[in-house]
Image 1 (cartoon, one colour):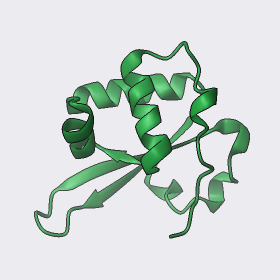
Image 2 (cartoon, one colour; image 1 turned 90 degrees about the vertical axis):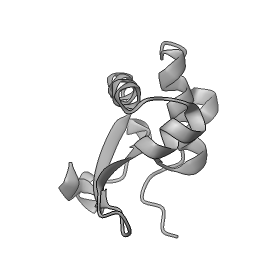
Image 3 (cartoon, helix red, strand yellow; image 1 turned 120 degrees about the vertical axis):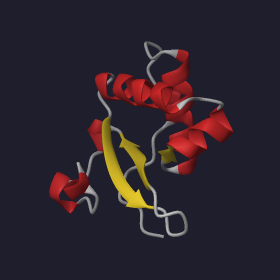
Image 4 (cartoon, one colour; image 1 turned 90 degrees about the horizontal axis):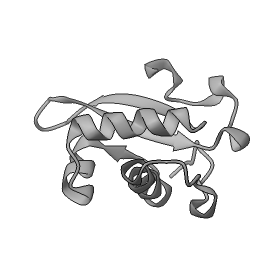
Length: 101
């Protein structure tokens, strides 16, 4: 699997983040991305709460890339969120998901 984002260092997560945003960021650090379904099942978090925490992560200086996909079975659209540290960013045009932002 090709990595397009630098791995987030859990030790450098700012303490100013809310507990929910902190949980989301730690999840992404381990799993590379998160969707609303994963947030509901693994973090017991509603979709609106996930969106609010993603905005808080952006406000903390992380770049969040949203990739809108279509589920292959149910044909429903969903968004997968990718985060990486702004100090370790790749060139924006090199990101394969940049067109969906």
